[in-house]
Image (cartoon, rainbow, N blue to C red):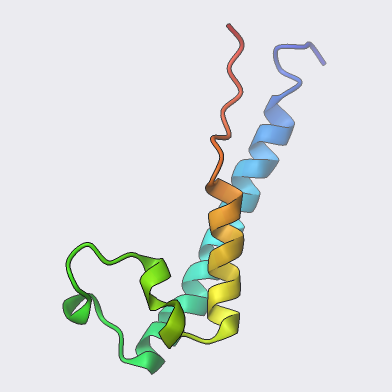
Length: 80
């Protein structure tokens, strides 16, 4: 494998893992929002997901923390 294409496999795996965790986040948090009675309509303007932590279960918050940590640093591999 050439040096220019060697990064493609890890980058594809990381992109795939990010999508898996994102779908897991949706599957875990949307039911938790419904159970807590949280809707887009009753959230104040400018509210973020972290603002709901006190109203959701630890399981729902845990996957949100994992996703946040996964995407908090830029994941771009640029060769100049």
